Image 1 (cartoon, rainbow, N blue to C red):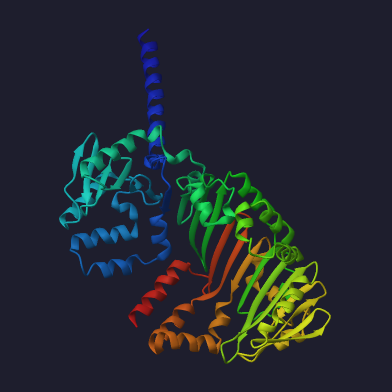
Image 2: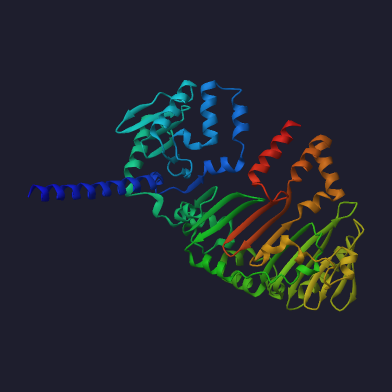
Length: 505
């Protein structure tokens, strides 16, 4: 009987041990539950990952060691090699948030090391001595930041009234972790799931629908409270990647996103590979007109415009619209080439008619050069612009060579270059060929004129790190990717190395 009782007790103890271990693990994993559920903006950063990618620990430690005591220098050296030496688990996200108060949340890895870190900060006069109350260690950093922590989580809040009231608020947030927290919010869950070097989430929930709609008529009819923005920043080998994603349950916004078309990229081959700047968007003119018709604010804003003409102009566009700058002439005027896929030539016909009005005679002279083909001479700068329609394409250019080769594939087309690969699934795009731009005599001269010889040379040196930049719109997400010349090393490491070299000059 005693053996059975002993066995039952052991089984019960094991079950309780497993249960409490699971609970402990849950608390540790949910350290960010201390973020209040009404937070309107949250940022996250993976410090250890950035330290590893930058590979700058030794340099930063040596630099900082000149200004601190040997004890702090030793601690700092350990921290820069492994952020967890601070006592915080910096492999996990450190969160910053804005709600009724502003604060930060981090996961605790080693309570003893964390207390040691605060003791060193106290010795340097950076924070008050640690005290303990209600199971939490606490201190005030810099007289402005109330910091509370236990063996699982550290929570810091900006002091708004008194330190004691702020500590009480922090305790309430930590107590409410399991009942009223941010972790069930879809946008926050998405932010944690992307696992980025740096991420941020912003909600429009607190914004009044009426006030924002008034500032932007296009948003009329959209429930702003159902929209949030998720952003990420990542440093990869040869690339810096920035994204913005619209998260929304609003039916109007969802409809707009669903209606966005993708580029067909059939115009790429009309532009040379040496194009300095290229922009493109897919335009469904009839769809845009329908959206305007349904938007009362836009109808009121456009009352002074000839609505029939506007509808005819917009409805003509059906497909890709692309423009590019191929070079700058000695006067600094860019050579521009633009194409648009269209159903008819009405937009260029209206442009020609407008420019031929008597009041425009002193500014520009327009000649009809054939069916839907026009030549405009701008008297002030002595520049000739060619525009019209050819084979279903509207065109405009001030470059005579581009005019002679309208609708013809370039010898070395832009579409064959690696820096247009990202356009495949995009609905809009902007590309900057940094290498070609820096090789332009006009751009070099402009930088020297604006910055002076010494600063201009430093700016050119800094920009020479980059190869090209792409900005893409894909459904509900905007991408900004900056590609480095050095494809092998991490982009953050390259930025720090080059920045250090430039700072020494």
